[in-house]
Image 1 (tube, rainbow, N blue to C red):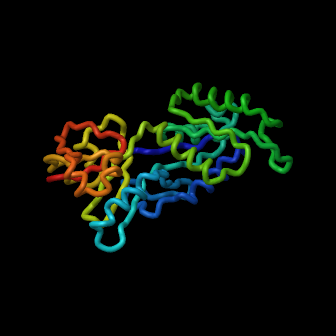
Image 2 (tube, one colour):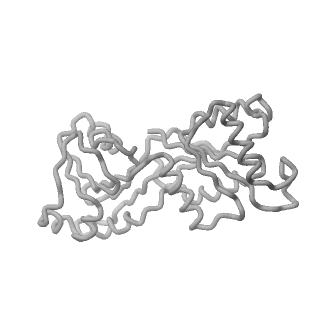
Image 3 (cartoon, helix red, strand yellow):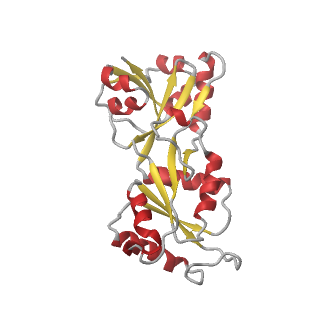
Length: 257
């Protein structure tokens, strides 16, 4: 599944600064995801989710040793600055626009800060004008993608980065499915909204989709209240679902093959 967000904007808008800040959330377990080799301008970034910590607490009673925790992740691509008339080839525009076409969503960084040491390509700071320039270039190039506009006023703090990542996650129309594997690993999986469970578990292991029989499912909220799988089963909150069950955000899924 492609989960790529292209960071775009005019030169000197702060795109690379934001990208480097996001790299501080670079996920440690890149190998857990079906991504290609990570290039210097690509970051696989952790999606913040407080539910993971609680899920670890619930499962820790049956864990053997330390639990490995793997959050959901999305890919950010730092694309070089576009300029006016990029769709006509200005500033290597065709090459950069091609990169944007490969992405699933756009994070548009718009300069809203004054800095006499960093020249603005248009000569002055005007956020609305800059938004319109980039929007028009994408329109002229026939690129219509879900877009989140970020007004770059200052270096982003942790809360701002969390918000940006979550907004981009929603932009990609993703929900989160959780799995607990053998009491050893708790993982959050990005799933396209509307996906059925047979498709979703194919990310966990390709054999799961081919050999899928059924899945045990419990919403995170109910497992949280129960406090343990044992109590959740006693309450009848763990359901058995077939291959056509539509995964809901927060579902904790155990595959049966």
